[in-house]
Image (tube, rainbow, N blue to C red; front, side):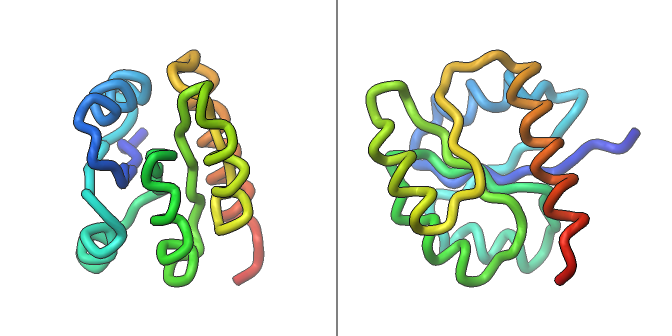
Amino acid sequence: MSQANYLLVSQNDALGQVLGHALNARWANLSTAQNSDEAFRYLERDQVEAIFVDARDVSECKPLRSRWRGPIVLLFNGDTKSAALRGYQIGADLALAIPCDSRELVARVRALTRRIALQPS
């Protein structure tokens, strides 16, 4: 099975480490972008299965959704649930509290990716 490629939009290096560990390097490649502009430059040269967005950067969901049809997963700490709700309003497909069980994270992202892939364009 080939590795899936994912993109994290966050200015928080620690979140990248947590997410990378949860996804497991054998299962997925995780790249990072500081903002949606960097994310678009990345997407021009590489394909990704899903984009993860740090809830502290929830405003990045709107420009991402306007130009990308794939899954957007918002990652939030338990105390920032309002950001998760706002994320749904502006384009996130899924919001996950972190830290979370890595098996659940992988299963939910795979299910979301599968569902979106089955939708007609």
